[in-house]
Length: 293
Image (cartoon, rainbow, N blue to C red; front, side, top):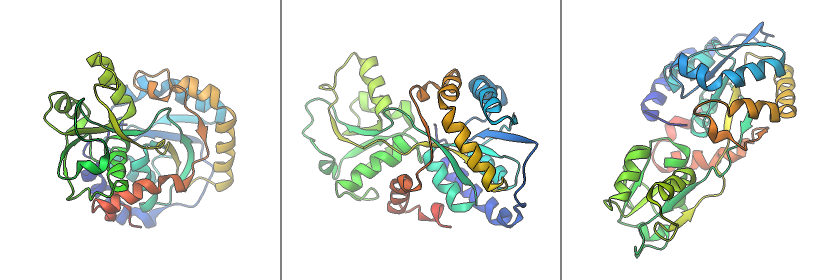
């Protein structure tokens, strides 16, 4: 998921949640479920990408499901807190912030094959490890992106570097970071393994041309978050139904134009401890307030 203006949106979200957290209604069984996706801001795009999934989920849960378009991550999260949304699909970084600021419940984790971050250098570079990036320049993607920012930053931390002062980090977006790296304007590039493969394909290159010097384990899953207004037993029932029908749901999910990233995904119970990597990075880069309860 793209994370455009993530920090700014998050600060807006924190303000809105401070004003609305105490307005949560009692649990109830809804007549319908309202579904939003944090990074889809246009209703037409929401329908284009997620209509097959919405229809399949409606059938699996035996409950009418409606789209709830949002204009930003902050508005999606605030809508969840204001009981305007029942189910919200969010990326790992967004989930961590929402989890810290609301009573929303992680319903289902949506795994993503090869969802990991890498750091690469040009062929012939003397840099052979992340530790050797001390004092160098690293191009990354978008602020708050799990694979394009959080993951590479965690690799720097594991190498003993301070991400705030140990090197120069340029946040350039997916295309900008790759293009800057192609042009040799930075010492290294960090981003998703998928974007790395895209780089190799578009350049007609091999891993020898852009050696990987560090790689994360699989990153935390995306999350379908449930509103705390839903009955706890109902949430458990929904979780069981979704896991047991995951082949059908994943097949529907990947029909969208921009949802091919979920090809080969699984729907699993969300493991809260998996998201500590994101919390560690937010603390290290001085953004601990984003995840403070």
